[in-house]
Image (cartoon, rainbow, N blue to C red; front, top):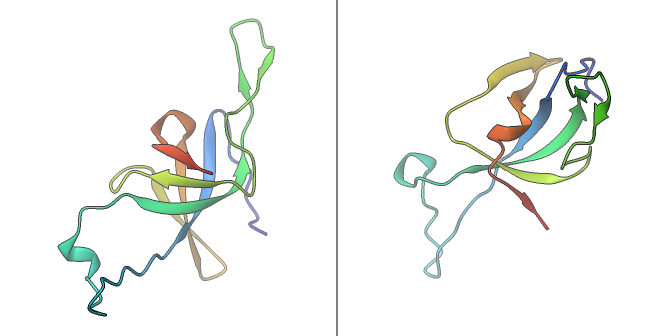
Length: 95
């Protein structure tokens, strides 16, 4: 488990390395494809409205999400790399 708790509307995501193989068995390198990254939500912050009431997140720890290719902040904790992004920057929830 990560030793960080995101603040505000931020989400800590562990990127998942997805290998794509086409029908011929050829692996397409990441540099040759423009595909959003997938990740697993590790921790979420606490969103509050103007009155201080907590607003629920659309994601929860354990959810798989689509991350933008560029964006967020890369964080290294115990030799693992994570992305710290705002919830609004997440592209989608993988169901």
